[in-house]
Image (cartoon, rainbow, N blue to C red; front, side, top):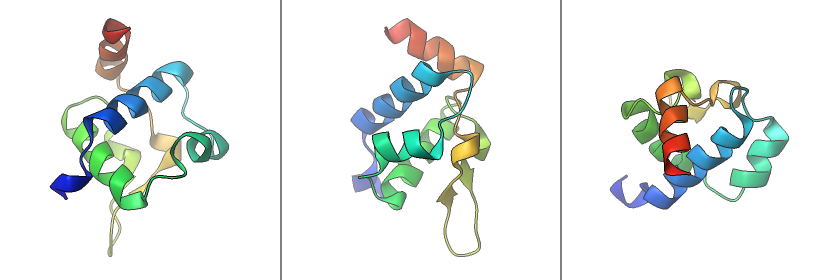
Length: 88
């Protein structure tokens, strides 16, 4: 799992979510920005952002077999938005 973690991808996620804050991405927007990424790569990086308090904890759905990205819940937290604005 460690090889899937990417600080670059995490900042890309933060930047994309900042652009649409406070709403979530549409499925089309998600596919446009992250469609080339594997589900596993996205889940690992989203879980790190959740652990850091940057995105909504419901952005990853826990399934019986494996976790899945929950696009309608993929939102910055207020802390995440402040962090993103501070990096601009």
